[in-house]
Length: 480
Image (cartoon, rainbow, N blue to C red; front, top):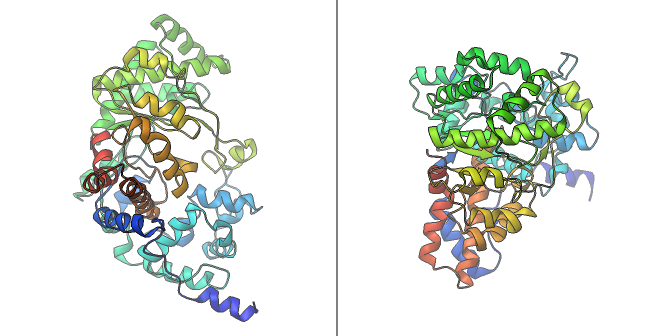
């Protein structure tokens, strides 16, 4: 192809297919299309994620396209980094305050020149949905269109109807949950509440910093934790009391869930004496790796008991080897794209917790996995019998059309639909939220259509299930 022709193709209008991700056989397509149309405009329930509450508190304009789409999104910069592009060149800030590219247009040009790296990835689908549906830009991103796309999006961001609250309302978000450490004072949530804005933004209790002895600054974190709660958190009883107090504080800002990002799904049910002894070792920094894992496991059981008391839904997000590169962790800090899935056991790992409280129907535990081999073998059978357990949707590396389809195929036969919790987007990338929910709705409707056309589900039932998966189950499971 001649160079001129290539440039013309790059500049040509490009639009996402309205029938993307729907089945290709005519009969299933017709059913899937009707199902999708019935749920496409439902409000978004976003019960777990990592958007910044400061956006909604201050309602300031997003600074520029690069700091909206690239700098905060590990899905984006990890792919670019995999091809040798330095994180500094993508504007990712260094821990030591050293040089990182500040020219947003330069960052965008690097992104646009390498956009081909995202072909066939879910990231590309989310990005192009955002470019077209949110910002009305219908070009094909490339080196040739880098500046024109940047200028178009930047001009949009300067307008009032592209500020965070306006986008929240345009995206038809009914409720969104952010995720905060128990050391957070929740000032941005307070500001949202005091502002009079009617958008519903709630928090979630993420206690990793004070339940993981291997978390940096654990002892100092626990000391600060006790100060915030008004308890002597250096004692075992004071430490548990501090959790109860901080959980209630989070509930006062709308929290309906806690979230736990442990390396494994291991749980323990220790005696008070054994737990206290481990806690004291953790504060002294003398825990072995095995002891740290035991303490984390026991704290999941303690959190489950507290959930029975205060009603918070317990989310367990295990199985990620976080911050795999020591050099990147040192230079750039946590959550910089170097979290890698690991093999995860659930049957043996969860037994101590389930023996303690697993048959309690008023307890709600949502399990996630990065190990798809556990879906049919372990997770669906567990959720299919324990009243306290539900399965979270395809997560993180599997938050893709193929991953969502595999999730339904591998779990439905044993757990059904009603031991799952619909969809959550679990994202920091605000503009990708409607795109992610749209993908999930298309995939679920496509799966339901195959059940209808193969005689395993009545069409009327399929419409009811489609609504449940898109909206009702998430709202019910997260008590929103």
